[in-house]
Image 1 (cartoon, rainbow over the protein chains, first blue to last red):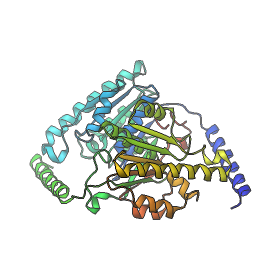
Image 2: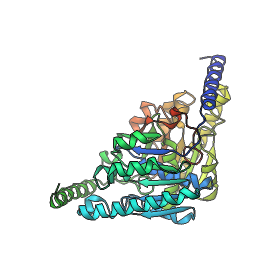
Image 3: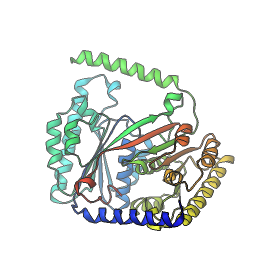
Image 4: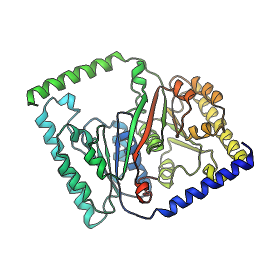
Length: 201
Length: 201
């Protein structure tokens, strides 16, 4: 491709891009879902939370499964006053072996989420609330998906909510604004390589 | 499902999980690629970089496309001394309209990457180097994929490298340890909703 053809192609792309941006106008908080079996669901939510702090916003993070985030994230949560960090879960489900206890902690987490959302109704206290691994609590049936969907559908307009975890239920996908599936193409683990501290957790 | 059946299922899962972890033993730095057309490629890399800082590690981030990361990320980069942030690109390609200038800045970025990798050879200076949107520079042909693959293949053993951007070339996927495709299921943009500051950028 010659330089001038490239320049014309790029001009066309630039024009299309600008028109696309101009055509979009609704400005409100969104519901984002990161799902799928691949890496990056919680890490992208963590990155989004920290970036929001970089923008000067306040963020709340509710962890539905304890141990999903490492001391790496903990340190950062403690480092920034702008981040409110709540742990609701009680260990990975395959470690607790106690379904009724799991349901209890999922319900306690959800009730905290409802409080956080209510706090945003009068003043925009949080710009973003991250509900980490909520999808797991939903797909295990620890929480009623219709109840959860009802609350999320009626969130304050400016509030952004990000839900992570594999197996997002269709009811949640239906009401979400942005849904991304993290799809594993290959994983170091499959080739006998240990999970890397500071990279994978 | 009864509580006791659930407990047995979970015990089985726990055992499988522990055996899986025990069987894995290779401990070395890995090459991670985040690709696909969906959200979260760069944000997950950003989250990984910040988490590594939380673990007390040093990180270098090289941005191949200027403007990909917002003031939100910039503020965080400036906030942490542990992060070395280098911008190589010169605006989105559809804004520069100058192929030879784009190639020049991609090459200048790559030469900085080679220097950073060399710095890790004698002492483990960086735990992680993020090459943000390198895939774009590769898929536009701004950099020779064989040259890049050769350098990445010969990285110091303990160094972790994370490459982002849609359209990762097969040659890169082949040598990577972990590859995730971020797949868009739906996007707020398609429903006329503006990109949300502090959430999407």
